[in-house]
Amino acid sequence: MNKSIRYILAIIIIAHIVFFTGCVEEETTVSIETPTITALSTPIPEQPNMSNSSLISVVPKTTTTTTQNNNSIAILRIGEIITDPDLYEGKDVILKGKYGGWGQCEGVKMGTTGPPLAVSMSAVVIFDETGCIYFEGVEWISERPISDPFNPAYETITIKGKVYLDKVGTPYISKSNAETPYISKSNAETPYTSKSNAETPYISKSNAETHTSGGGQGCASIQAAINAAKNGDTVAVAAGTYIENVVVNKSINLIGAGSGVTIVRGSNPYDHVFNVSVNNVTISGFTVKRAKSKYDYRFAGIYLNGVKYATISNNTAMYNEYGMYIQASSNNTLTNNTASNNKQGIYLSSSNNNMLSGNNASSNIWDGILLRYSSNNTLSGNNALDNSNGIRIVQSSNYNMLNGNNATLNSYGIVVDSCNNNVLCGNIASNNSGRGVHMYNSSNNTLSDNDASCNGDCGMDLDSSTNNTLIGNNASDNNYGIWITASSNNNIYNNYFNNTNNFNFYFGKPIYYNCWNATKTSNKKIIGDPYLSGNFWAYPNGTGFSQTCADEDRDGICDSSYTLDINNIDYMSLVHKDKNFSN
Image (cartoon, rainbow, N blue to C red):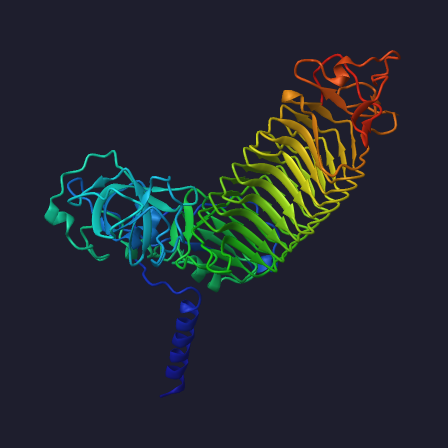
């Protein structure tokens, strides 16, 4: 072989290597439904090596959908629904299994969702070898229904109903309103359909988990694009559903087309959907769902571990054990995300100096936002609605700033437990079924200008807490204004109390000394008069101490003191004939 031929072959080999380096695509079929990659509108923070950055696009493979046949309904295994409940939500199904009565499927292998939540005390359950599903009010197709849910016969039955998801996405079956044809006994006894059955009127599980490339526009999966990227690159992910667990181990910008259209669900439910382990990462525009915990392992929709300078924005995390889990990470920003219908919404553990702003944490089973062993964080303008606890900071989470957050319609609004030197300023903790602000075993915290109104129990609560300052707060229209138990040396002044049933305060034993007024100073008080000193004590019917006390010198301070308890006296209660206040 002469030199010229060897030279040409060498060029061909090098070109072949260069061309196929990067992401490997399983298919290159062009789909007419391939989304168009548009310019990114989300600002990209500065990242390492941006001077040599590039954009890598990710386009999902074409998914084949089938239209539900109006003449038949598929007979399904329970495990199919448990494994992929999103696929069947709202669809009519026929389900065959063993009747288990009301309970938790004891002795039966559970599905991937863990023990389901009962719909009601009248709910019953069926199961097969893959898990169990609760149902109620369904149509029985078996020859005879079971009448005693507490003494089940564990016989095989067939039922018809519609798939619904509960608060955290656990499926259950209820009676369908859709008209369906009569199914004969012989059909009802048909064995389970296999997943490969082409006539099943649902998306095939295998198809749903497959992605194609967009005709050379980019990578076939998010992970493939990350593997091909270098630090500083932007990976733009087109609209679609991606079934994969994504490991983010490079400092990149990972940008979806929007949380409403770019959905990522882990192929392994017992793992994080996005697992970030490096600094300087941006994740924006995704919905992440169905990360479940197993034993003592906690899995999340978005997980940061030992990470700095990440920006997590405009994402939705739902139906996860933990929506967003920040572990041992600092100097990160979480903004404008939604964490809803998870067990835990947004969780910071041993993480310091992070900024959480404009996030919505709603309808989570436990906490909307939880800080544990996490200090010097700023929570600003977040909404925590319809959780067990709206915002909870616990176990030596110190020096945090909570400013302008809204904790409404929870059991407890804001909870501070065993934490010191935190500042809660300008927050709304109202319309909770229990307590607005609950502080336990905590010291040297400042609560100022918060609205703790219209709560079912009390506006503010101090339990075994010392040396805290409560100033400028509104605790009105609660059952109790402030509840104090075993708490001492707290400074409580310039607050507005006006609560139902004439219960502005309550002392649980033992009762210790607290200070209820400051030295008279020329500073605007909570009801607008020029001097700041004690608290304003009102009742809705106008008979409160501050509404009826004498003020001969017209300085806006009652001439007499207000005794709450022998150790708790407001010596300079505020007075104003106008019952309204200005916070």
